[in-house]
Image (cartoon, rainbow, N blue to C red; front, side, top):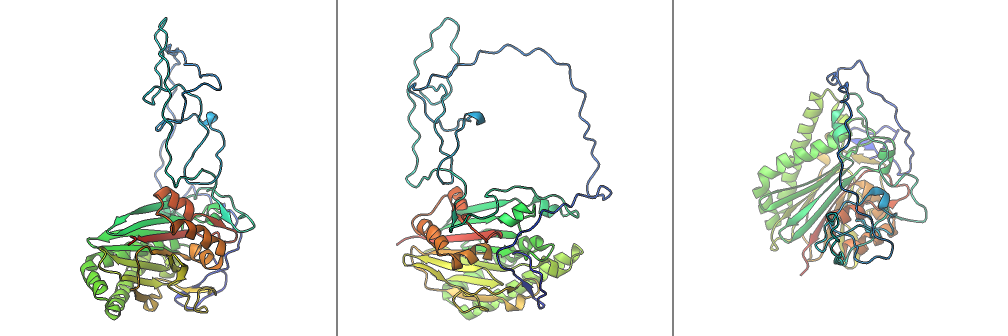
Length: 430
């Protein structure tokens, strides 16, 4: 969630418009601060050089036009032999480079002196799946390309001893099968945070307890200095509250007990928020500096239960993709009821736990795709038809692999440069 300068009431934090231009921060580590041990990194004295051992002469590459050479699985291609990638897609397909191969696909051993080499047979071509797409940089939708680079640039540095921020990866991807469901999840640092060398403030969770699946996303509030602690902490504390109560929650979902589910979900969120506030204080931080949003889905295994439990605090998105298009299942309560007007303020934890929303989704059909996401993806999905067409044309047709899902989830839209976290649930077709 991007920073905003205007003050907000208690329990709410400002959320800006998507267009902003952060500057790089020059905040070197204080050499006087005892944040790590002083290690002696002096290199050892170099050993005397010895003459290299004679080795076999390199096998010459065949001339252009020679037959019997193809891309071989498991081979490492020299970097200077790679042509530039073409097209768009999650995996690399490049023009085959010339290299001796054996009939089994491995390298040819050098022939012994004065012994003619055996003829090289043609290797079978590498088969690509029907859904395979050519490689290339992340695509964008819209008339103008985003102003930021398409790939990570600077790496977050240690600031104020915040080791957690340094250790957070730029990108997380997860997924699996759960009964009739297929799950894909990703959390990606936004273009603006990459450019400013700031850590990812979003978080994503996929966890299960027996026959109950918990998926969740959290969006740390960018105007608060330690919100990345809040987003990752609230997901861990939510799982700590949900998983021991899996049997009770599962029974409520199977019975369709919406009122009882909402009551228990409210207690769970309150307990997780209280734990988050206590953790912030143990770190010596004001609880508000850990502000984060939260939204989660509780999904039973098995085809006999269509209900999915939903809970949320703050902004984000819950959308459903069906054959007839996209549907917003959680309209912004501060907007016009259709998700087209986005409020500039949002509830956040740990303060606004009493404003948690909980509901049951009971009209699930085979083939549905539920999309749970932070506002880094929810805003462009609701506002940009081209993005809905791009993702709907892919997620509504087939379940992608993990790498392809990550590539698809990162499709870029100008002015939307915040972190993105998304979990997709594909219901098995009838």
